[in-house]
Length: 316
Image (cartoon, rainbow, N blue to C red):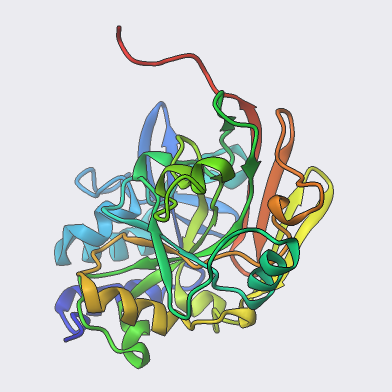
């Protein structure tokens, strides 16, 4: 059953129909706010309604009244800030699930084979967890861990789920998608190889920058025909298109919801095209001071600078 015909889903569809809707989380006076990007200005949706959630995940989970309030606020709020002067946060900061798909671009599978990287590539989808504590903002620094120098980048399209759903057919998957955003699925390659699950190597703190906003499906049209590019400093490393997917987005959602319920705000990182640092000979891993920029056609870009991992932050 597709849980996509509820009043909540109908309200979300109305919200998506507002012209140029891109939902953002941003910081104002040290506090998070929910906003919408319209004509290079951030509309503060909480200015007229202090009860609105402060991020997109919370909005999607909050139900019909919150959806209706957000819809009204986008149309009526006069509290706006210039985008250039606004600090954006990850639009979805604490989803219940942050899942990544491996081996999803034909070009990336081929480069793994050509480089002789010892990975078994099965004839089915291979999903892994990224712990949600890895999420950081679209322009925040990212940490080179003390335990490894094998720090790699993976520019990726992210699908954000709009409502709870189970047993979704591929043809109906568009009904449960709230929108799309960008991530850099940063990977510590030696820790990734320690276990078939890949989770440890994919989940270091700050290794899931997200943003810059959530773009609704109407804004980008067909998501499986988008250009995906990644630069390290000024060097273009990845240049692919989502039409190189081995599995469609519908097939991805059908596979996952066969097993478990996807919930509002859940994020699905759809894999990366060729050009990752590990596939170069010799490998070209990230170093302190380098900036990684990921840009996806119609969605904007994120850019994160590598810094040394800070000292321990526990209270002992």
